[in-house]
Image 1 (cartoon, one colour):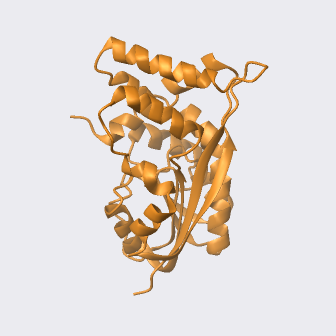
Image 2 (image 1 turned 60 degrees about the horizontal axis):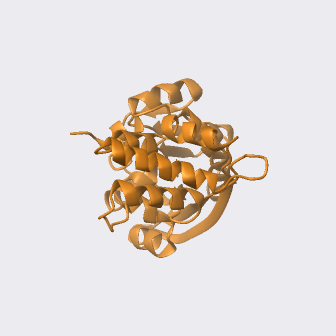
Length: 260
């Protein structure tokens, strides 16, 4: 049996962390809008520490939670001013009402959609802030993943829970028992590659979810079909200079914890 953490340890996360880096400053700025500098923040799924550092640079005291050892070791080196923990977003091991904000860049979206919000409620002080960047089920990355899933699991009609966070009605339904003033702001970032081969190398060796999917293929034929689908999709976005030009769509969710 494998755990979800095995997926994230399946290849080097550094290339993906670099691509997602622009979201860190966006998330930190939203946190700064909601709570004062000097407040206590927990960064869930802190990865290599990009958002942790953005929060630290904004004047917050940060506890960085990262359960994947490979990522946490790199994160500790990149953001040594933070307090690092091997806990999870559903079981943070933090005291009740001990933090002013729960923050995440593409990490908390993978938590259980019931247990996660309940835990964030538990550790937040009254009127504490939730700020989380999540992928959407639209745009370049979502469409590419859908095409690969048609090959990897053609009989499955279910959508993974983490993919649905970008739908306003889903986010509100998951959070409304614990939070109010729930808002979703759509954002994009450049998602370019020097060419199709550079894109292939990124997804094969720098994107743990996609690397794991290819590793988990049931046959050589299925793997070949997945690779062909990925290559064809990248080729659809090549410009006249041979570069892959695309936009990654994501949302920033913000909310305020209920007073009890």
